[in-house]
Amino acid sequence: MSTLKRYLSILLCFSFMASFAQNDEAGIRAAVNDFLDGGTNGNVSQFTGAFVNDAVQRSIGRNGNVIGMSVESLASKLKPGQTMDRQTEIVSITYSGIAGVAVTETIYPSSKIIDYLNLLKIGNEWKIVTRVYSRIEKDENVLSSSSQMNSNPAPSNSPAPAPKKKKPEVVIDDGW
Image 1: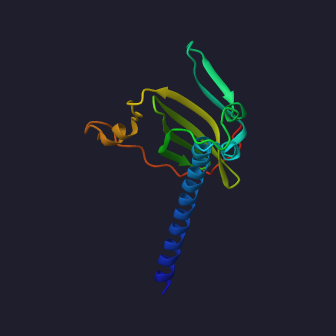
Image 2 (image 1 turned 180 degrees about the vertical axis):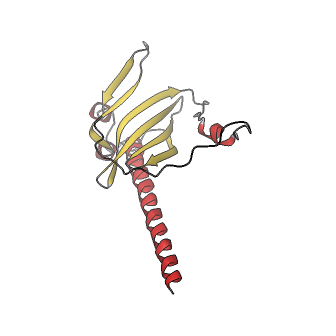
Image 3 (image 1 turned 120 degrees about the horizontal axis):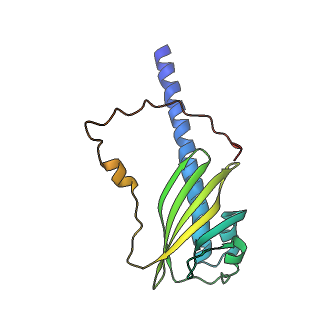
């Protein structure tokens, strides 16, 4: 009977951990969709609610310099209640602990914007803290090295991988 209890305890623990992971992914998707849908539909409060108050946005301007604006400046360009002619998609989400990254694609009639959104879990809610974006040609695609890195097996003469270390405890303020 104790083996059955142990098995059920382990199963319960894994399902509890899986529900946290699903909740985190759902929280990230909710924040990113508030950003995308709020912008598309001219819902300023939904759009700004996806960000922390002092979030920054950056890109490269026509003169080659780094440009940026506040969330409020970008939100002021939205036309409340007016739907934009664009299609949006979440390309990828990666997260661990309290930090996450989402890549989105917004397709306009003549171009495409790729957003790299950094998110933090604040309390139980995910918020965008930085947005770095690139306007590209409509037929260009998002490039990623992760699939290439994971699909190439290590050469047989390479050293054995280092043993996995114990997962460190999540630190909210690490002094940076």
